[in-house]
Length: 227
Image (cartoon, rainbow, N blue to C red; front, side, top):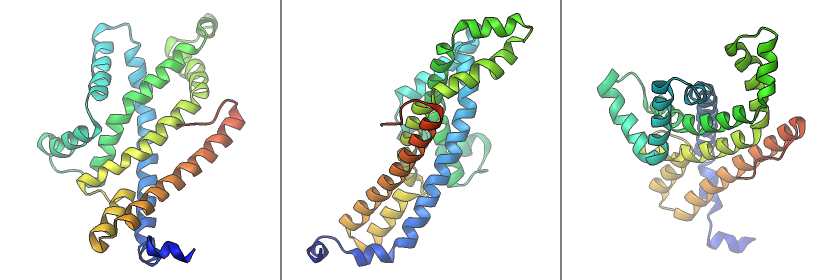
């Protein structure tokens, strides 16, 4: 294995272990916050998209199409430079990054949740309303739990995409895993060590998510995420 030292300096990587650890923690933390927020808002966006009120579903559809039609990089810049002009400098770089990623991920989560809602048999809704449940209670107590249980796999798949998307936050000086790799490269000019280590860290997080996904799927039934 000593021949590897001619191509990859493990000592430099060891010197930056704390930097990469901080980057991993920040990446996971940002991903979890954005995942929770995007699922929460995604439920309401999905319901708006399914609304019978024209203006409501058109607003939801326009938002979804805008996010799909524009690159995430542009969306991050729009939020980073646009929010201060609209509401002032109330958010730091990490908070701004979380807002941008949540705005980006919510429509995708909404479409996944909408597909799950549609997949629930109509007889479930009719049965609940027949025993006196209101439409809103039927949706939140009968339909949504069944829909989300069916969508664990695609939701986790979107979570993997979200995890990788956090790397773009380095362009607005958010210190996450990609930021750790860029810092190491700027200080050592060791491209292989910086970017291979970054890639291996992302791979490690992904494999852990794969294990968690498999465990959840075995509990609920279905197929593990395979993105």
